[in-house]
Image (cartoon, rainbow, N blue to C red; front, side):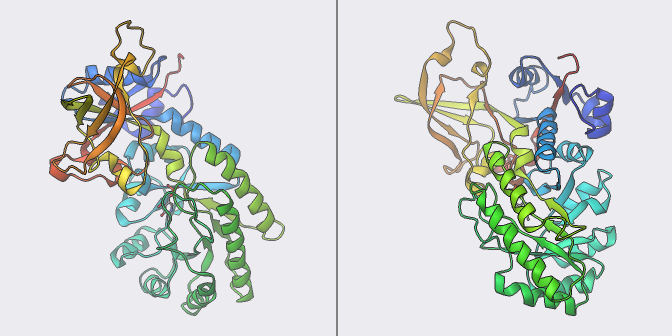
Length: 421
Ligand code: PLP
């Protein structure tokens, strides 16, 4: 990996670009951690009290390390949709990741990093024509499909493109966001689809699936890998010579779930796709949440307060229409801490010793824009800060500018490991 503990600012410049470093939006992580970095950003750079993210590059590096140690034969193609923050993409590129792009704009943002098109999979089974033409023009030559109509479109506009047939994972029970209802060929659709591609003289080079985002059932990978093996067998029966890629999709989470899912994946690959049965095979994956979620921390400012009986009500400057859209779309459970009490606070009169039932609203005029009810927080005042950890997955990527609060404009600061610590 290029980015290691002790990265110099010169190395960082090469990875995340000159403007980040010279614009003072990157800093070595202090000994006492992220909280004190956030405090210093607030003091020195966030006079306007706008919300901001801190991206911890050390977390990204160690997650890549964990992936390569645990699943060394499976090459990650980071799913850009999860969080397309440019410095984050640059870091993933420097760490050797490939990229799963869902649209023209995502392909453009990855190519802009200097990544070559053969490190990109256009992994959207149903693509707009203009985006297919664009992929053809820049040499992105690998995509997914699960319908005959898609084969016809690709044949017409990008005949050199290699195809992975996306199958429906047999089991996505337990996924936080199941994808099966929308995508993936059913078992009896596989042969007709392979034949349609054959008739169109399009090379099907493999199979893909997605067990659902935020999968909690690691056996789902085993079942899906077994189903993919049946696709390879069917293709062999049909005399299709190009099958060489198995794409096991995303669904991974960076904590305990990965510890359980990775051995399942390893064992299933060994059982169904051992190298002697299938020489020359390559395995890829499309993890999004695994890399992005824990790398980003969000700081929001308290912009209003109201006391109603025993309940404290606060307004903050990000909410459901912004970063916390993940509560609705991604079914996320978010957590926050009051900034003053997130580190080892030694103040004897610390307000955190007593907590109050609190409601936290986002800034827009909609009552739906409520981040917490019945949440325990210390007594806080206007201008205090709430800090939300693990806010990197499906947050800023899907926020709006409803009421003029523009999620896309939220600044990100970068933290990297300091060589002296
Ligand atoms: N690949 C595809 C095709 C997806 O649709 C998604 C998420 O929706 C991902 C990868 C990333 O999934 P995750 O963030 O669960 O790893």
